[in-house]
Length: 218
Image (cartoon, rainbow, N blue to C red; front, side, top):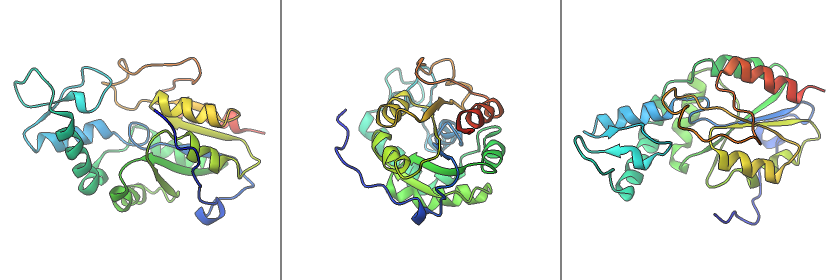
């Protein structure tokens, strides 16, 4: 997938973030929140099934009894509807909120989530509901360009957490000094999720917080 040639990132100052502390960028879905569980509940309420038999999204949506997954276009419409009206209903990933609160004692935290623009209000509401006052940026496509624009503004050490290898690869390609970590929150997805030697895979948030603190320590 071709990445946008140039993305203008907001200034850290405009986001209320300091240049004097390390910067940690964190994803939401399957990192801070149990997206697949929440989306699955949303689908069940519409007479559909989420079958976790591969590391995928739309290819896991089925009508009951069907052997072929739902048409991708229909799945995308459901995805958009979920984010427009229900993304604030997902449960937090175990240990994620506590770990982020701990990291906030020594680093600036920025939430970088790939979600439709319509989700901004409800995604912000979800963060605040769980006591997270960190700024939120919604992105589309690979996260390397927007992350690079943010990271370039600070002389401090930086870290990035995501569940998807394409986003992790993109950030490392655009900002090689940034420590990148893979975290997959849903127990059903963990054995299915691809791994890479480029990014430590740590699915326990307490251990992940330890690793992030070590990576951003002076």
